[in-house]
Image (tube, rainbow, N blue to C red; front, side, top):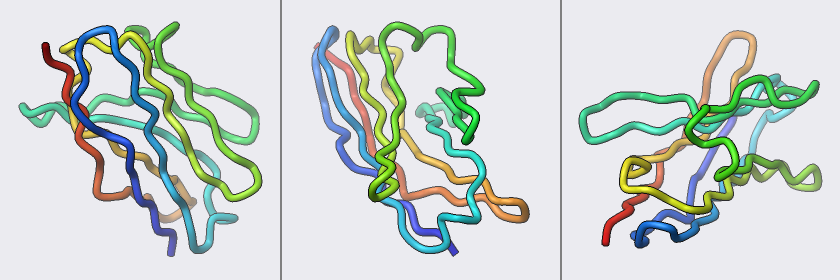
Length: 115
């Protein structure tokens, strides 16, 4: 089992920044890929970025140049640095860990971009 807990969401004005964190615990050695995704109020799920031991495997085109995904090798915490936020970035953001036979996500953190 792997436990993921997202934090760092909030309400910001357009052009603002937020840094999301995803604390991980449990059998993290079973995870071969990590990702951030989001769900809008209309329940549309969108993958933002994914990474394996080999590096970044996907990055949402509209997030390139604004968002950065990273991972702390010391404790495994995932981060999503989001700059120049836009109203269309409003969503619940989740981190995900992909194992061979299971997929783990946290409870999500709400990001609202509004003036």
